[in-house]
Length: 310
Image (cartoon, rainbow, N blue to C red; front, side, top):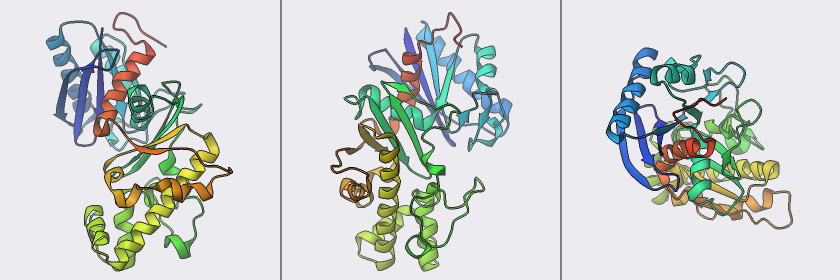
């Protein structure tokens, strides 16, 4: 049995085929077509079918999504690929493919990948946070995804920024979700750019802001410090709530030393303990963790193409 993991992004779909030990057979990548729901589903079916034909052996399928699945209705919600919101995507794919498919939030797949054979392999409880254009999270418990009762566990990007004070964090931010001061409005590439623009009236990318901070520009340095403090407060809240064995950071901003190096020293004073021991480490598999986590999702859930699972 081989396991196919697909990581669905706004611009591309990345896929990997691997065995149950995590050894990769081959990787694939196609453009995400999303003008209509029908086009999006057809793209997935065509890709999965082509990979299956090439492999010519039983293939279990896991998919990492930029959204979550409602346990009550089975519909996709909160996805940034708008055409799939409200869609029973699992049912649609299983009907078209004639075999089971298992889906999960991409943040959870990230955490699962790192828990199975990545930076969290030595820990029973892993919290993963992705810092990119947005901010997401995931929990893996005993090498299984922990989605929570409603499928929204670890949605750290949409909790209110812990300890928010306008004097320290800047003016209130209205999130695209409709709420105010969500963590993602501060701790993300988009948030970094937006908060810097409030300081300077200048619109720059997060990369350009980091470059200016490295050159010593005052406003850029101030915003980097704010970002670190906001990230530390968020991670301290995570530790106080679930006390993970390890925190693993992924996404493009996790590669920026200025933002994440030595975060333990910033988090420690904020945690309700006398001795902070939680390591905060980079992801071992980097950008591959999404698709690898989707493949591990199929492995860990025992999805096979002969029978359907609940």
